[in-house]
Length: 127
Length: 449
Image (tube, rainbow over all chains, first blue to last red; front, side, top):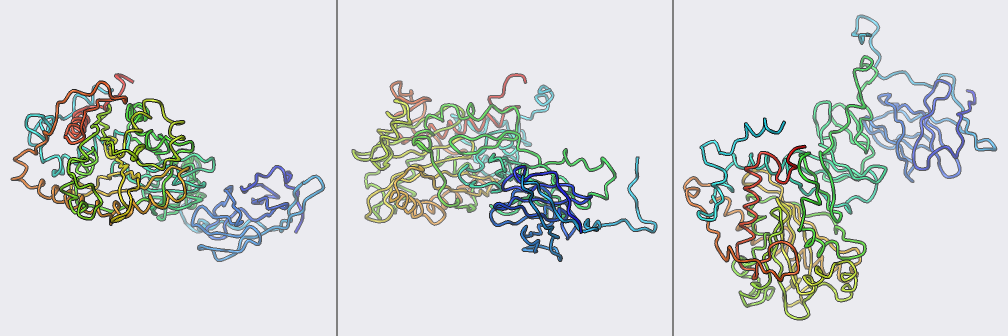
């Protein structure tokens, strides 16, 4: 686990909308919440779809576009839908001038949901 | 480009009947227009895929993500308010396999998600996610080109949103033309405009859609027969000529209405007296002159959007109260129509009037309304009988008070014929129907794009 700056300040984040940022090779979702900021993984734990930018209302819920899994941005808990695992959440620290930093585990990025098989499976043709 | 279409344009039905022979002043109106699947299919092609058709009202959308599903010319559309507050309309169909992406009548959605393979669209219609995107070879899945297909033209008047599939159809303002003068009397007369109360009643009737429009061209003279029991209940004045006064009005474009004066005290369409200064503020002197003298008005915007602003007792023995209902007659088949009936009220109307107007509407119109049920009985029976092969040998009769000179002194636009018992506005509606059915391009389209 190590702390990484995001290059963003609190004032850079829109109110009522999530933002995707790359931190240490990890896609992180940042959401302004009251005076603070919440950070979660931007990949849905279900089909590894990018949850991405979207409106976030007072209820503090984000929805995966693909199958509709709904997570709390506060603790990543699954509120509705098909996922089994909660969304990873990352601790946030805010500097004196509002700089946002997040704690990212060493292996944060989840594996893809659908990996082509290693033996004889179809592979996309590269042109 | 258009000339190719003109060359193949068919002005006859399969049996050789000329379409412009279906509606004539001499012979009357062919029953086939109500009871023939071939004509229904042509109506979808030549009227509903070209004309401006009502979809929904802006006040049905309160916050981003609110969606309403409708059909436009028999094809599903979804209307959705974006995060920018703009209400957009799309063909309700996933670009992957064609499923509807919204399947509820109304909802609030972050994403319009196809339930087949999970393709998901943002509130602005752009494609957000496809399943297993990493399995496509690079550049194969061009998401920026795979948004939902927008309805060709979308516009609104006084909050009423219309859609149109044809790029050549004139803009909505031009299409409504003179009818805007009369619409303003009922939906553009107060500072903040009007709003939908609740959600529309929606039900289906086994009738041709034109019987509904025909009735709402301002057919006042069916009242004392079809709704005769209402006289016994004291909900209609006993004199059968009492609703024969006023005017039949044909605005341009096949939009028609009747407007009827009442006894003193019933002016300004029976609306609460305290609203009159607001009406005067928002209407032109000519509009005020019409509204001041009027108690009720019924009309239709071509092809299938009608209204009634009537003044009725909400129950036996009660004083009359006015209400405004708009209806969209959605054609499902030659003998099946889905009716969408809205109660509309001025946002600034007093609270007690809002309660009374809702009660007056729901007791008299809507699927369980005392008047509405009488109408369904007649429209369904007319459709059933006019579908018969023997019946279709004989035309229907429209001839009451037609060909009158318009009153040059009437303050409003269009042709205003004195007296509101008559069939001129019905014939004018059918003439417009025939104009669209025999035109190779939308009526009013610019000569050459």
